[in-house]
Length: 217
Image: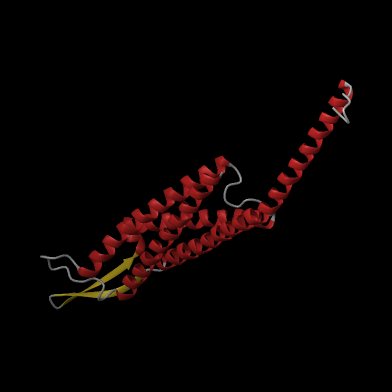
């Protein structure tokens, strides 16, 4: 009804269509405003997470390379005294399977961290997601980080046992503390094991960020 007069059906349909179109435009405007308001906040949170992941990769690579360098330079010549008899001794990291295993794992972690660092930096420069560009990549990254973290823990624990045995000697036998004549060798091994566990902690933190990225994907 309009001024007491009934409008024809075509005019009523036209007015309803115009009202619906106006409502749709208003809704689209509100949605666009909300998305535009939330975009900077989401972008800022993603940027912080990406930068944190890149920083973890840098620290993990530095820790693993430091541990690797100290281990491969662990060698020394000296003399061992048992019952007033001197015996020449030569210590080197390759004489122990545990140390060889640790060197292999550290090398793998260093290469993995370097590759992921390059990927992260390239994605940051292109302003694309550095953590989870795709779900398959996210799962692969999570599996790789977790496997290497467990391998570091295993290798570090095995090397710690051998290093502790060298430092304390074998009880109820005549074998003494080998670290007395081989102090430089034992110090290199100790520093290498310490940085190994630091690298393991950093890699475990990366695993946590991988899980967060998978949950948000």
